[in-house]
Image (cartoon, rainbow, N blue to C red; front, top):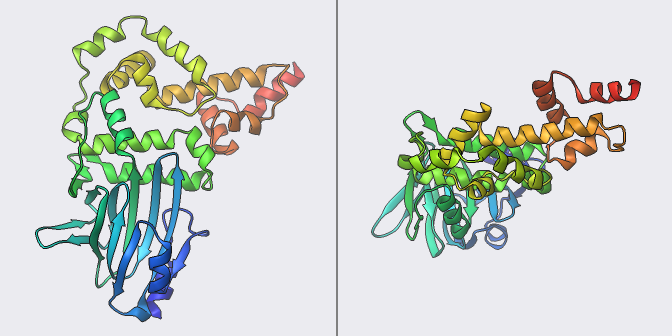
Length: 330
């Protein structure tokens, strides 16, 4: 039972306190997703599976820890499988694929796959389930190509100087930042961020070229600022969704990045965040405003009042409470 104790001490990427743990193969078959049709372990007395899962709109994220298993698993949606420690292997009569730290696997829906994990060490994994239609819509808006994944394909998580795994783990860290609150994650555009990162991971040869197209530069020169301001006035209380902004403006991903850097000196997401902070500043100064700092920060989609305060101070050099105090005194 030493293995159980060692694994129990290992934290998941998120939701560790609320995670589910199985040490019984039958319970494992009956309870986990993707649906498991069969499972075997090197030593049934050492069977261990621990996981936490969260769903934001049509993105589902799973963090898992497991001892060695061989399973037959039915996959119901497209997924990205990554081993953070150890590795996974999908081995058929014709092919063999492995997921490990520098490489993941894109797995399409399938009737069943033979999946196994590391034999001699714990496997720590991350699984992202996504909707292919949503992914393709995002890709086309970003001016990428349609993505067709009908077979298991490896994907590199390190391209030149770009560490996609680091970016993905930073994104997943948002889950703990809001204590797993799916409403706040949605307000922060968590699912849109996931789709944009997945698109770039699957088409790095296109998106790692930082130059905007000539068409983008023409569009940017025509009433760009007015268009973006009109959009933000309508969207400021809604989730931050860079893809929708890009679609509204008719810009590619590179074009939008180029435009906001050129006109505002920051990324598209930071620009959207700044507009929310500007609105918060005006609300805090308004003598007719009855909302608290916490209520304003929550309404605008900030994960916590402390995080809101950090952003606010960085932008204005004052704490929100100082603005309120000046309003009361003045």
